[in-house]
Amino acid sequence: MSTHFIEPLDVLILRGNKLFGDAGSYGESLLPPWPSVAAGALRSWLLVHDGVDLSAFAGGRVKHPTLGTPAAPGSFTLAGFQLARRHDKVIERLFAPPADLLIHGDDSPQVSRLQPATPATGLQGSAPLSQWLALALDSRAKPASGWWLRESGWKKYLHGDVLSKDDLVRSRDLYGFDLRVGVGLDAQSRAASDGALFSTQTVALRTDVGFVADVLGAQLPERGVVRLGGDGRGAAVTRIQQGAPPICDNDKLLQTRRARIVLTSPGRFEGGWRLPGCADDGQFELAGVRGRIVAAAVPRAQVISGFDLAHHQPKPAERFAPAGSVYWLDDLQCAQPDALRKLADRGLWPEQGDHDPRRAEGFNRFVFAHS
Image 1 (cartoon, rainbow, N blue to C red):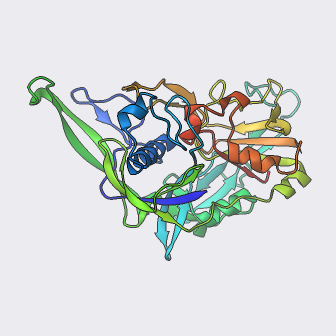
Image 2 (image 1 turned 90 degrees about the vertical axis):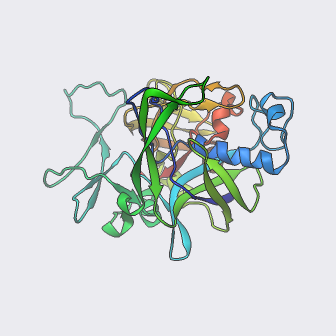
Image 3 (image 1 turned 30 degrees about the vertical axis):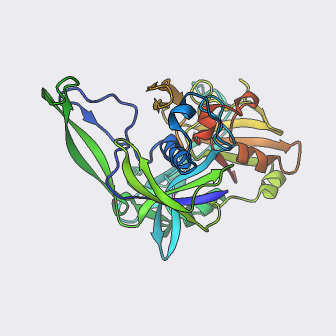
């Protein structure tokens, strides 16, 4: 696996899935962006670096050794994509708080965790799984927004340890938003159209703040410049000699026979939330890993599409479980000792999903965490 630091040279336009462009409309930016934003930029960069005819590649007439073709992707996989910053001469990854964490208190933030519990006899609800999530607090608290987990906090989170204020960083110290006004153009005259003003939100990252991308199955150049996000704003890419993000001890997970599955990128699942290999009763089996899903913390589904440059048309809009969704897995068993590692490397894809174009774009990625 190779790791690359992507440092924007300008403000970024990281569009979500809402249409804009009509007179008076407003285009909102999405942070963190979808992993397909980084995957598309890196793959285009690799094609140009290798001198591949882009039109021939888009038409499927040329096959790249690691990218394959648009219809049948090769070994290239975006294994990770996180916000990051250069801190104390190293690149520190930053993570949005997962769905089972509650950060409360603005001046002196505290972090509490949701825990699954079996509902009392007689209680009924619409939750499809056997256990419900509960939050035990001594007093009522209002959730605080605008916080990110530092890499130290992410490591504690994966091991189920208590997080402190030092494990958090404010979003205002990482980025801000800048409003830009655009003008619609007449396609025939190439002049401004009357009454076609619209505004769009751009992301202005602070100095030394960017993104980290982990790539499997391909060798990218040492450094270069890519077109990133809407309008193709420039970003410098540098390969860094830095290890993968923290993970927990798989042997301990097998000893306790319990784990959490935490999405690190949006997941395209059945019904917008159900993991592949998960039956209606919660029984889970995928790539040699078996267990029972007893609870889940899944925020409202995202609608994700994008634009297919090869076919010059929008990609289908589909429901995805957001990054940070958490699933509790009990009765954990493995067919092989390294099955957990192999599943994490492969991602939460069904057996027939190995060549899905969304796999190469970095969707359905996850990590295991102690329950």
